[in-house]
Every structure is written in C-alpha cells, then in structure tokens.
Length: 261
Image 1 (tube, rainbow, N blue to C red):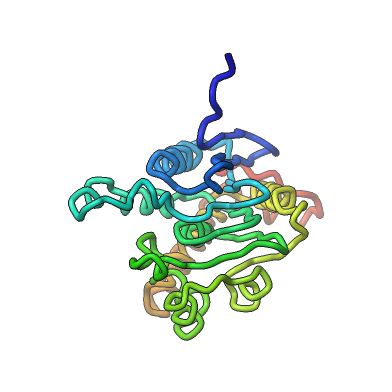
Image 2 (cartoon, rainbow, N blue to C red):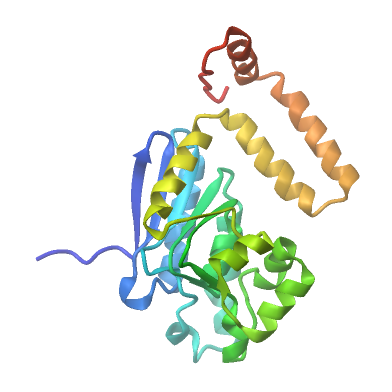
C-alpha cells in the first residue's frame, strides 16, 4: 500500500547549494493548514542551519502557490484557540531564515499564501499568477503580515485598495507595483527560481547573509542607522577568506570559489 504524500515535500538539492520546499496539498489548492505551516517553518530552520544549502526555493504546484489559510480549520475557533495555535510564532520563524528564500509562484497566492510569498526575499511569478489579500471578504483581516508587508512593498494607497476590496492582483500588476521580482512563462517558474538560487549559491554566503540582514534591518530603521549597519557589515567582511578570494579572483581574471569563511 502506498503511503500518502507528505503535505510539504522537501527536495534537498535540485541544484548545487540549493534547497527546495514544495507545498503539496493539490486537493485544497495548497491551503495553509497548521501542519503545513509547522513543516515549512521546520524545513526552513533546518535549511537555514545547513551550510551545504546557500539559497532556498519555496514553491507549490502549477495551479497554486498557496490559496490562503485553511478556512475549514479555523472557522469555529475562538480567541484563545487562535492564540494557542501559535501561527504568529511560525510566521516569525519563516521570516527569520538567514538564507535567501525565493518564492516560485504559479497560480494563486492569496491570503496567507500572499503573505508567505512576501516573507521571501525574491518572488518569481508565472504570467498567470494571481496575488491578493481577500480576508476582508470573510470578515477578518490579514493576520500573517499582510497589513504591514504589502504597504511596505507597494505603498499605502495601492495596498489599501487591495486590502479593503479583496480584489486579486495579476502578475503584471504585481510587478508594476514592485511586489514581484520577475515574471516568466508559467512553465518556467520553478526552473528560473532554481537557476537564480544556484546563481546566488555561488556567491559568498557571508556577503549574502550580510546583504539580507542589512536590507531587512535597515528597512525598519532610520537611514543613518541603516548606513551604520552597512558600514559595520562591510568592515567585518574584510576579515573573511571570501573577501580575499573574491578580490584575488577579480585581479587574476578567474571565477572565485567561495567557502563561507
């Protein structure tokens, strides 16, 4: 008898230095139930601690990245039950991954799915992808960062329009607003995300991690504080073997081999 497929399938290395996490609930359009959220957080934590993995791709299938939270699972919940579910802690774990995370989005990325994509560092979208925060239509608000991350990505006025109406956002609209990094043909989304992840994985992991930290911390700080963080980061990197290797390779006109030391 064949065992049922796991809700989240981990393909450890689709390319050198790359980890891939796939949400696999096709019958529910990859809705994010509590089990799926926990598994995503667990896999991202494990990959974040694995020195052999330098960049991570998070994806779904050709129909949906994740079409929101599992409404059936929470419809009858009360305040205390929602508190005890601890989904806010899982969102923090996901967003705290120190490695770059690329969302490869086909189909729907709605509600919690859109919020999940926005916790990532790069979003590669298929031409037919659809984003949105439709929680207003069921009497609630986004609870996984949508009211905070969407305005930071696209600005107050665009964000308010979509948060208050629940309208869907096409891939092209999302790109025009700055919500999407790149649009490719639907059939090329995962391939492109893995190729970009492999490109990033070839860079110095120390520099990659410092760039991610400087950008994310600096966005919530004053310009002066962000610049100070950046200055300390570049000074620190001059103690690394990767800096010496990178500059030597540039001078010698060869490809650098970074070790993360």
